[in-house]
Length: 151
Image (cartoon, rainbow, N blue to C red; front, top):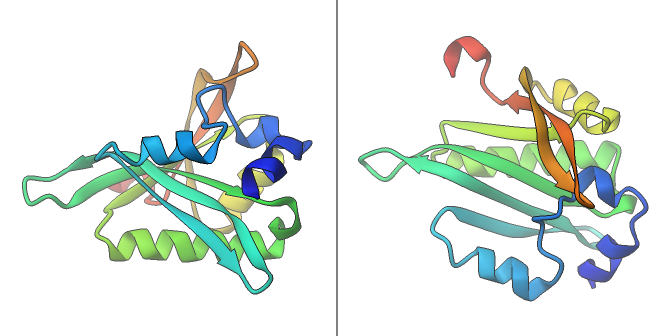
């Protein structure tokens, strides 16, 4: 089950926060909110991870202006397969009408920051003390799918 794999992941602190759900039931509760959409990612060998977009703001036509994207991939799918998974989720959300996507990446998570840059995301700022983990706040880098001049 994915929750067991997440709990056992030694890199969990880089992907997870104190506000992240700890069980499938808690994750399902988040989906009751109109501002959270989620999907389970499946690969050729089975379950790859989870993706959710939250914090979206709607236009008067009910089109999403932007969403904050969170993706968790199981360790076996990080690296080259991560790029494909992230591109697929991004393209899907754009097809749903999201005009921009944002990602908060912990400053000390170099691999995710490199992946965001590799995929064309733009670093637009630093949010100090943003991600809570084990009672301590960590800085996050803010990335945007659109360049800053278009945001």
